[in-house]
Length: 213
Image (cartoon, rainbow, N blue to C red; front, side, top):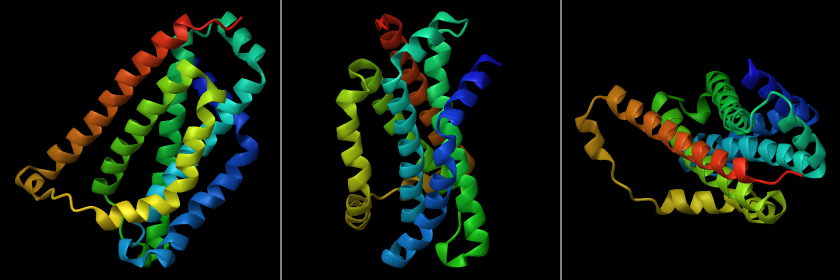
């Protein structure tokens, strides 16, 4: 219940931008399909996840930075710092789940985007977990002001860098066909959860030592 209340708080913070970001998430896959047809809608899905998760997370972080007293008061309530940090990770995963649902619906109405499957969602979950796993501890350590530009550059550069990486990628994963698909994708998801768990533990330790006065 405590985590749900904190999650609701984060969504209320971004409520003005949820509709805008939803439109962006919907439009990115077909636009990128037109721009990079060789990747069908996969590139668009990856980009929509990056924009959806990180832009909304950045906005929450911005508001918390602008109103530091609100965070201090929140920590003075029964909400523990552990719960506050954990809610950020859940918030990111909730946005990712929304991106998956939106893309799944888009592929039903726009066959040109390709097909969405467990493989795509599992690999993207791992990628998001790694990004979030690196980003949040750094932000808790150095603060929003010192980290916003670096990650802002990553977000803005991703539409240009990702196609180059995907065209250059020659990673051979054929050996995975030796194993059951459920075992492979289940393992990928478990690795993603492990990354998030380790990252959350580190973020909690950093935030516990933070002086919010």
